[in-house]
Length: 270
Image (cartoon, rainbow, N blue to C red; front, side, top):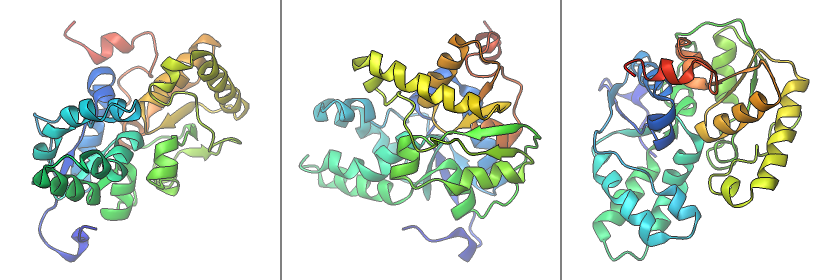
């Protein structure tokens, strides 16, 4: 485990792993994460040569392809004090599976790098609260918010209280779902391989959310957010869906995920 920055005057360097989905689908969440890290007092590094962490291939059992995808990642984040991820799923891959991915590769240097990254990787809200000691985020809101715990964030990264504490400190009325620990049906390639099962699980999640009548559904994983937003949209729900980083940063300019103005606001030059 890395040393707490509270014991040192040195400004810590936080390497922001943007993740593939945020980079491609919701860059506003990545920018919000960057500003939150700066507000917490970090020197933020966003390596231009960062790549996929290899999770999709790893989950599909293709170890060779996962290593090819993840190898550039090792050098990209080697010099950072911490690796911070606005996604419990990708954080879980780095913290719990990266070492296994390179085990038996015959590359001792890569295995050492993988072990170092695993030991310094945090999900975003966990890092802000547990490492940097953030009590109050920059953003403010009075919205009634239902928070969805992604499976990896909850079970692998043990993130439960941190996002709720920050949302409450921002002024939100945070309500817990009755089935907060139940999967939304995304699960990466699971939603592709087993569409009917995934759709039923997403409907169950939407019913659980609608029963609480929130203004907004918030989570820390883009896969879950896109899956839930799509299902709520098909059901005609007016509940907004947003990444937790956007709410904590107060960056609400972009349309909600799945919103009609989403494409234009995310790509203003188009």
